[in-house]
Length: 182
Image (cartoon, rainbow, N blue to C red; front, side, top):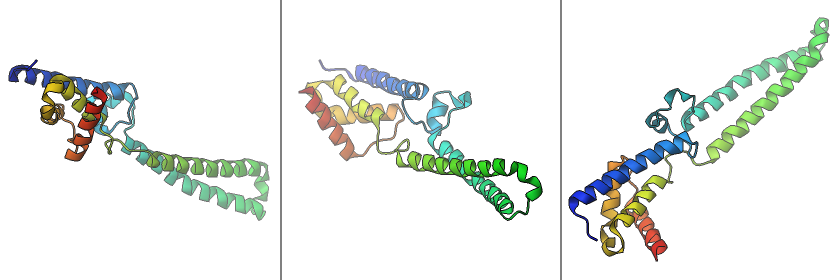
């Protein structure tokens, strides 16, 4: 069945609306690592969520603040070791314990930073909503109008205000959708 331009435009608008709502729902349900823009779009700015960049910055800040604390505790520990604080020997074990825990905390925070940075940040090469736009375009047009899938997918992506993937990526996704349809 061939759609009129008006029907096609309505379908494209509906698909774009679906993708925008899906993006918001993915953030609300914690299915994606959100960007600042994702949090804003989902209306969750005041919900205490961290976007990827803010979380990395926060953890780095904690690591940087632990460094001077460890240095100060190391100095106190050294003073105890050289009997310079013998009058306060009753707290030596607590200071030594605090030094060990602070050093352990810094190691764990640094590991967390490395692990977080080792994962894919938001808005990197993965574009699941754009790939969904290709699937939706294919569903709208069906097997009879395969040559128009690219153009309709681009219109859906633009209407949904998503980043546009490269032509190569679009071609790969269209091939995948066609293969899945057989």
